Image (cartoon, rainbow, N blue to C red; front, side, top):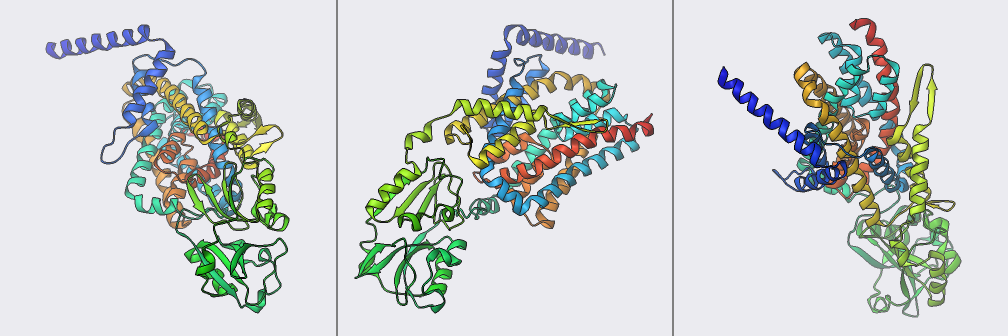
Length: 556
């Protein structure tokens, strides 16, 4: 017995020494930078093919918080706002089109996950006799929702119990979702890769083998019609780049209409070319003429705000200038556009037409490659400030006050700016490298702050209340997570990446989204996340204090 007491004394002394050294020898700023550096190093370690990436910062921060380290005040808030704002900017160009197509599905998933968590929390409170405030804190922490924590705290006097529940459940909520995402990507790697190369809502195709066919027009139904008036060219990723005249391939004139036995050169991918050939006529021999088909073309970079955000059909380049966009390169992916393809800032367009007309189009699209590396700090500051103001705006529902918070406000403003790309002088686009740095940097600050705050209280909380609260928190995380993912995959038939994105959005899990975006280059998870997240955020902010109010009479 005395031996055990002596060992405990030694451990206690060592623990106190570590606390004092770390607390007094490291300033908060050095602690922050140290946690980020060590976390990023640990995140590179791969076990069984799984690595934590940037999310590893959270675990190092939990350990640092246990030993009394802290970050400068406000760093976590700035980091969270910056991260979600950049997520919104990135997802904005596709979010609203995706919302129109799948918004109802994502909203249902977000609501389903939150309400399942509320049911599990209520059942645990009833069975185990947990206080209502403690249960509300567990639910808010399990779904990693600080707005819900704030809503409960404002609606009850038992704030200590709420904080205890949140402190126990928050790390569990983060860890479980991150590990689940990593495992799902690992075991569904083949499907995730296929999902990445699937067509997106705006007609953008994954990089494939772009081919060309010489086609003779024999379909009487299209004779006398412009190419833009034939539906197949709006629905498929194919373009007519040239017409054969005197055995020479020449760019289409602005007023061109199909004539019987015309020979046209079609550019596209194999599956789309087959559909176009069936509509126009038959494949013909044009090898001798095709040799000259690479002349009269130009590659331009889109930098003009008058162009990006609009579809090719809206730009009317063919009717205005006799110019055809035969290829677009976007984020290292080359594809053949359709009439519905929306042009984005930084797109590289391959154009075919007469040289004087190509020179005119250069002024229209901008073609200032240097602009791709210019970061507008004024737009960043104004956008972030607007997002924080939106997040602080409260809506009153009786005695309950609901706000989007620091996470929701910047996300919404980022989505709107990203969608319109520019509102007045405020830009909604940034160079890819700068945007990635801001996204990862903001996430690192947020995870460091959240981890150190939770780590400071997690040990005494667990020592006082045992593992029961941890088990309940795990149940509130795992059951809604499973219900949401299964519903997304097998009821709504979403892809793996869409299912994971929607599930993370329903769980309001920013670290889960970080794990997803690190593991894949696809925009599908982000689009699904930002469609489900706002619904889940509002519902949990309303449901959490309501749950406490309903449980209070039953647990007293």
